[in-house]
Length: 370
Image (cartoon, rainbow, N blue to C red; front, side, top):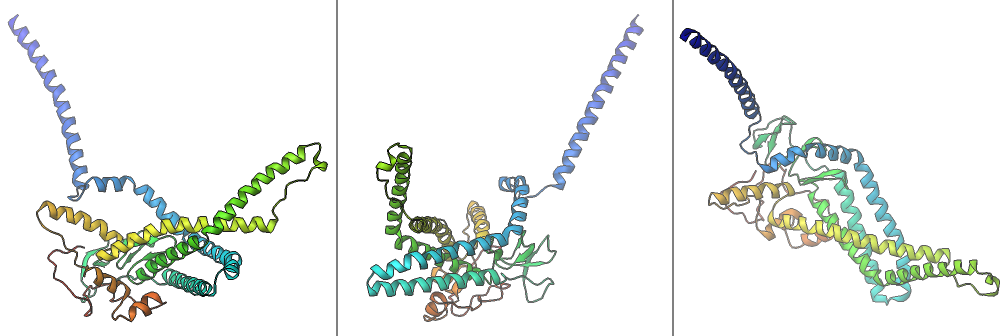
C-alpha cells in the first residue's frame, strides 16, 4: 500500500514538472523575441519626441507627396492673388488717390508703391528660380563632412539636411516652402526672407491706405442688402406701381465695393500671417540659426545644461554680424544697394565650410552644433 502511494505521488510530480516546463519554455521564448526586437530597434537617442515622430510618419509621407505634386499650384495661386491685388489698386484705389490727395502724397504713394511692388516681384522670382545649393555627391578632401546621409548615401557637410520632398540634401537647409515650390537653403535664403518682408510691408501699406475706402464699401454693401429687402417688399405689394421703389446700386458700383472689401480682407489676413512668419525668421537670423537648427540647438542646450555646461552656437557672430552676413553687407553703402534695392549678389561662402569673412568679427566657441 505504501509503494502504491509513492508511485502515485511521483506521477503527480512528473505531470506538474512537465506542465511548468512548457510554461517556462514559452516564457523564455517570449523574452527572447522581445530581446531581439529591442536590440534591433535600440537607439540611445530615442525619447518621446522620436516616438511621436515615428507615429506621425504616415502623415508626413502624405504631406510630402501632396506638397511635391501641388507645389506649382501654390506658386500659380500666389501669382494670381498678387496680380488681383495689383489690378484692384491700379483700377480702384490709384484713381481715387490721384483725385483726392495732395501732390506730395500722390508722389509718395506712386514712388513707394512701385518700389515695394518691384522688390516683391524680384525677390519672389529669385526665390523660386535660384537653387538652394546641393553638396557634392562624392567626398572631397577639402570639404569636412559631419555624417553620411542615409538616403543619398553621400557625405553630408555641416548645416546640411535631407529634404524628403526634393529628395536631395540641401546646404544650410531651413525648410521646404510650398509657396515657392523650392527648398530654402544657402543660396536663396536671403531672397525668401526679403520676399516675406516686402510682401508684409506691401500688405500693411494696402490695408492702411484702403481702410477708409473699406469702411465706406462695407457700409455701401450693407445698404445695398437693405435696399434689396425693401425692393422685394415692394414687389410683393399690390400697390407697387403706385409707390416709388428704393434706388439700387449699379453693377459697376457693386463690383467696385466688393473689390475694395476683397483687397482689404486679403491684405490684412496676409499681413498678419506672413508678418508672424517674417518675425520668426528675423529672430532666427538674429540668433544665427535656421528653423532646423533651432530645434537641434534647443535639445543640445538642454542636454548641456543638465551637465552644468553652456551651449554656444558656432555659427553666430552677434546680432549685427549675423544680419550683415545674411544680407552680404560689407560696407554701409551695401545696406542700400543690397538690401533696399534689388540685388543678385550670391550668399557668402560655398555652403560647405563656415569660416567667417574678414569683415565679420569672429569669436571662439567651445561647443559645436551639428
